[in-house]
Structure formats: structure tokens, C-alpha cells
Image 1 (tube, rainbow, N blue to C red):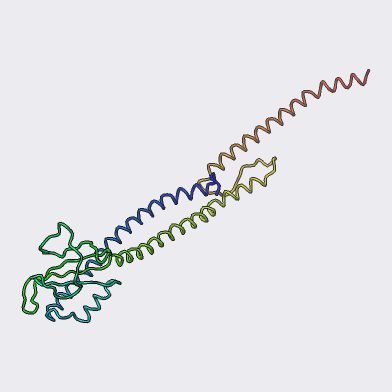
Image 2 (tube, one colour; image 1 turned 120 degrees about the vertical axis):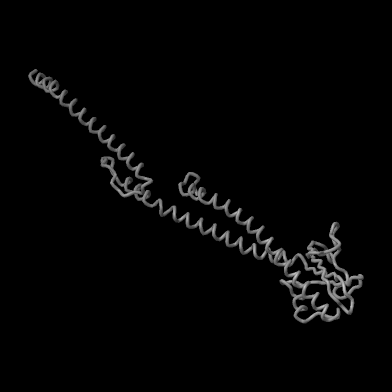
Length: 262
């Protein structure tokens, strides 16, 4: 594309704000998707924790139901781990070593407590949940810990964002193509005007009478005024030459007659 091309300038003027808006939309989509994924996966952890708490109470800590086991084994596309211990600190069921609580974590979990931790060298999202229940005659507050690899959530976010960014990129490319050919179609009347002017001979100074877009009418009017001035200037020049020739004709005729007489 030529740097002084009108088409290039129009495309830059149109696409530059569009690209800025696309970047803003991409940043907003990233933030929204990340927040939404956190909420979805956190609710999944809470649902699994509630199901495990129910099954532990029903089975007296022996086993969890098949439906809950399926939920635990394949929650949101990834394996979910759990750990349950009694009010006296005795291990009830699940995996033996849950992720360590971060410093500053509350001792009494009135509400579900979410945090990021490590499990066997991998980053995980953890939910610590307390529920008052009775297991094997032991009543009290049971602590239920449920955690899942953070890679599952990252993969989900990456998948959603990749599709969103692909749609945004496709829209930008589509607009660029439409603008490119649209500007060409919009400039076609000017190109036709250029060809019509190029076909004129130097003696054709009549005003241009061709349908042009409103934006180009001022240019055509100015060009017609210039042609009118040139035509009047040429007419004045022809009139001057005609008068000069007439004024010179009489003396020259006398000189010729005298020359013939001599």
C-alpha cells in the first residue's frame, strides 16, 4: 500500500480505533472469563464438599455414593481430591494429606474458605468446609477439604479465551477486508472522473458535467471554474492576436504597394 494512498489512510483511520476497541474487549473478556471460571469451579468444589459430607454421614464414614464418586473423579474435566477428619482430629476418609492452610486462615470456617495451595508439587485450588454432622455416633464439626489442580481451570480459561480471541480477530480481519473493497468501490466514481478528464483534448475546455459523490462536487466545481478561466484567457489571447494582426495589416500593405511601385 502506498503511504499517500487515500485508501490506506481511510483503512488506518477506521482500523486503528477498531484495534483499540478489540484490545479493550479482549482484556474485558479475559477478566470476565477468569472471574466466571473461578466462580464455576468454586461452586463445583462446594457441591462436591456438600455431597461428600452427606455421604460420610449416611455411611458413617465408610464410603461415598457412586454418584458422588463420579462427581469426585471427574469434576469440571479434572480429578478432584478430598479429605475428611472428625472434630477430634481423627482422619475419616479421603486422601491422607490435604494442602496446608495459608497463614492467616481462620480457625473456624463459618463460610466456605477458598485458597490456592500446593499438592505434590502442583498448584491446586482448595476449599476448606466445615459441617455439623454425626458419623458413627460422633457428633460435632467435621472438616472437609476438597481440592483440584489449577491446570484444569487454566485450560478451561485458555480454551474459552482462544475461541473469543479468534472471533475478535475474525471480525477485525472481516472489517479490514470490507473496508478495503468498500473504499475501492467508493473511489470508483473519482477514478471514472479521472479517466474522463484524461480522454479530453487540450482544446476541450467545456465544464465537466458528470455525476460525482457529494464529497467530490466541490472539487469538480473548482475545476470547472479553472477551466472557465483558462477558456476566457485563451479567448482574450485570440482576440488580442486578431486585433494586432488587423493593426499591422494596413502598414504592411502600404509598404508592399510602395515596394511594387519602386
